[in-house]
Length: 110
Length: 114
Image 1: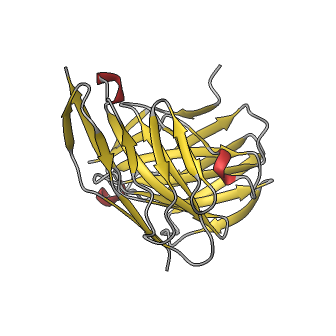
Image 2 (image 1 turned 120 degrees about the vertical axis):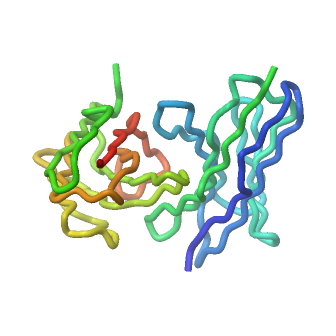
């Protein structure tokens, strides 16, 4: 079946630290991969996406590369800010249906 | 200008009651969705409507009934509320069934069943 597994949180980092949130997937066919972000009290927003193997999605300093060989789509940012504090969801789209991971809560402290 | 709006934002009610959550989108999208996010932040699709027709109906108790009076609205009615229904419910919309990556989410409705 189709599923997404992402690292458990919560994650707490100091400002300007390096961030990695791991995400691996299981899917039939050739899924598209996404990272969504949920800021406190708000709905999910698309952060970045990649639609085929070796594609790199990037936005607001965040990056993730679609790795078919390791079935992974890890989220990275070189220097986090307090404003990055949110819950991050990895997701895949296949067969016209989304599958979300359980979310990873990130808190960045000054 | 809110793209996807939900009302109410918070809903506290007793077990056994019937309640509705409304969703409206002003983006001109054809497809709308309801998701449930549980206390562990797990987000799961419940329903999807395309041009007012039901496309996805996941394994959801039949106490939950979506209603789409027009393409811009997808309301969620819940009968005989149970404690386990407590969650955050998100509405979303996209440009079409084949453009789900364009989903826009509403701010969520926090339902607490006592």
